[in-house]
Length: 255
Ligand code: ZN
Ligand code: FE
Image 1: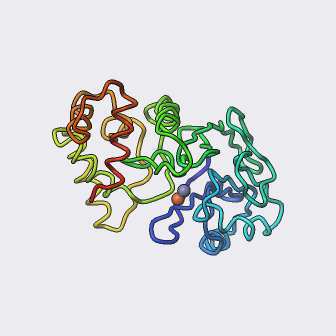
Image 2: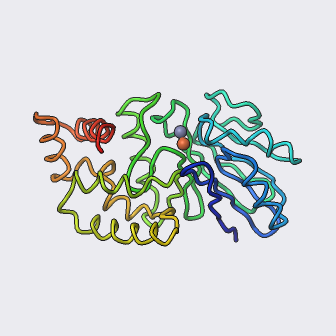
Image 3: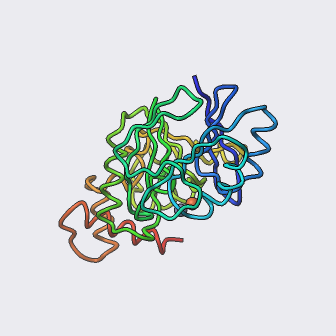
């Protein structure tokens, strides 16, 4: 059995450490020192690094952590990330060295062109693709790519724990409520997650089931979401992809 811990870094990043009491892997180590402190404090040996995409806040600590010893470094094949020893395209299944853990690699382009996610054993590490209550900005990909990537993640089992890389949840849920003011489950979630933040607790992981019920970026097919997007755009929207595209653009300017 592995345990997963969120090591906070920068303003709002979570660097996820997976450990079995002896050995550990870290997902998206944007900064080395908080991860090194965590490992040293618990006497854990780092055996693997899993990178989802090339942004600095996800790989900035990679080299320093890889230098701790025998560390396999997994990352997207199509992105330039120094130190990757196991380039991945998506579609592979990997065994995480040192941990009894097998993960499926999923290509999820959109936020960046080569973004990958790691799924297995009831959880998914999805970087900046699916967020709690939201989704990543489209820096390198198209809305169609992001929508397809989110659909792949949404097809995982509903109980899957969603370990995204940022604590953006409350801002995301405020926007979600602007899109869907009548969604009771969303209102409930906003109260629950506001409470967590007020107590200084993380809102991540969420579950895929909750995301499907409350995350507007997984709900382009829901009539209320489509109607809100259409009102915002000032025109009729013919397809779920058009709805998704409008909602993604709307979020960029929503305050
Ligand atoms: Zn990013
Ligand atoms: Fe990020």
